[in-house]
Length: 247
Image (cartoon, rainbow, N blue to C red; front, side):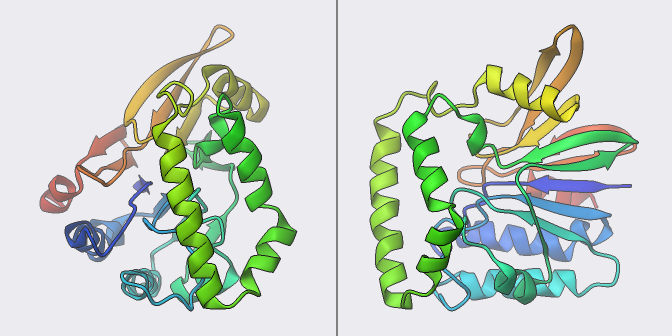
């Protein structure tokens, strides 16, 4: 079995080469995989609804729908901090299955925990408070009954504010807290955690009270890009272009 994981693609009309790579992944090696997991932040701009036709939204939805329509493909998407508002309408349009954060899956008969990763950054107290507010069901309901024009304005204002706030924070604050990582892994009884969000591609060895574990952090698709592959050989990272060329 082959399972693929990507995160933090931040697809945008400003980086058409990344959208091309993503479409080549979907129409190439991802068709041979048993499952494809997108662990948040598929889009660069905040997701505000399927009625937002700002490029590359329609093109991404079309590519995902075409991929999902293949008989053997399984597409799972987790909400990230750029796409809190992915909903049933998006799932129907793309054919994906929206999964909760966190979600447990089974690989090689072992439990693996999947997360976007922002809830692990518990040292960033202000962000966690904002996240709790913006993801509240009532706030999400109010947001979606607003006119598209107003949703676009709110999205722009929030994006500008958060971009400025991130620049003022130290790298340590916006990274995953090791104590929180260990706590979450012990809570779910897993030895492997896969997440994105921090854009710091790496595999970390974790000490779970004497039991070895691993935290696999997915890279972003800004300057570079990556896919995490799990098959009979275990886990490995590949650049998208390299992976496409060898399949």
